[in-house]
Length: 375
Ligand code: F6R
Ligand code: MG
Ligand code: MG
View 1 (tube, rainbow, N blue to C red):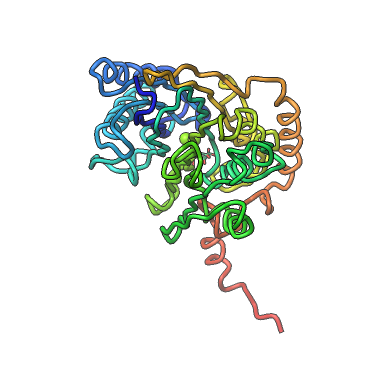
View 2 (view 1 turned 135 degrees about the horizontal axis):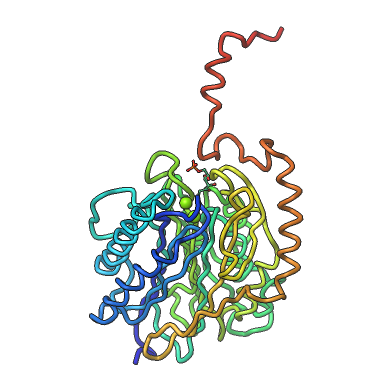
C-alpha cells in the first residue's frame, strides 16, 4: 500500500516507426512493448504500466518505486523501444528507430532521443492524474494550457474560490537554448512568467509546484512536461520532439475539468508538417490520434487515471472522447483550413530561424551572382 508513501509515475515516449509515413504506431509495436513491460511487471520492476500511442509516438506509462531518472526504468524503456524497432524494421515501417539517436544506453534515456515526463509523488488517499500526449508539435505547446490550469483564474475557478489554491503555485521554467532554469511565483510574478513562456520555442514550463502551506509538499511536482529537444540533441532535424505531460488533479489542485478546460481553445502550436508549420492543437480521442491532413493537424490526447492504493493505473479514460470538445474540434478544423491557405507563407510556415530545415541557403547561393545593389 502506497498511500502516504513515495511512488513514481513515468511517461517515456519515442517515435520508432510510423504506419504509414508519420501517421500512427502499428499495433504490433504496441504488442511488443506490452510483452516486454508485462515481463518487467511480473519480475517486480514495475508496479503497473499501460502502452498507448499518439500519432507515430509509442507511449509507455509506468508506475514504480525507483524514483525519477532511474537507470533501471530508463533502461527498460530503452530496451522496449529497441525491441519494437526490430518489429518496425521487419514491417518496413517508416523511420524505424528514428528517435533512438544513439546506439549505446548509458543509464538515462535523456539526450538519447526519447521524451520523458516523470514525477515522484507521495500518493494521496485518492490520486487522480491526467497524462497528455501530443503529436506534431513541441514542448512549448504545453506552456499555454499548463499556465491556464495553474495560474489563470478565468480557467481555474479554484484559484479564486478554493482556500487551498488561493495562494497560487510555483512554475519552474527552462531556457532550453541556454540550459538554465528559473522558478517563478504565481500570481506575484505573473507578468514575468508570461514574458518568458509566451516565447514558447525557447522558454518552456518544466514543472509546477505547490507553495509552502499547501497540503502537498512544496518540493513535490504537481505537473511535469517533457522538454527534450531532438534538434538540439542530434544537431540536425530528425523529427519532432512531440511532448508529453503528467498533471495531478483535485483536492487543492485544479479539478479534472479545470485541467481539461484549456484544451477547449485550439491554440496555435509549432511543429506541423516537416516540423516547420504553425497550426491549431486538435484535442482528440485515442481512435483519432492519427495525423492525416498535411501530416496533422497537431493533436493531443488526454488519458485519465486514478492511481490505486497499490499503485496500479486504473484507466485509461479517454477524456477527449466527449462531444463537449466537438465545438473545439470544429473550430480547430476551420482554423486548419484558413491557415493552410497561406501555403509556404508565414505565419503558417515558421520564421526562418525556427524551421527544422530549409532550402534557403542553397537558393541564396544559387542567386548569389544575380543579387544587385539597390541604389
Ligand atoms: C514528422 C513530421 C512529418 C515529416 C514529413 C516529411 O514528425 O512532422 O511532417 O516531417 O512527413 O518526412 P520525410 O522527410 O521523412 O519524408
Ligand atoms: Mg515520425
Ligand atoms: Mg510524432
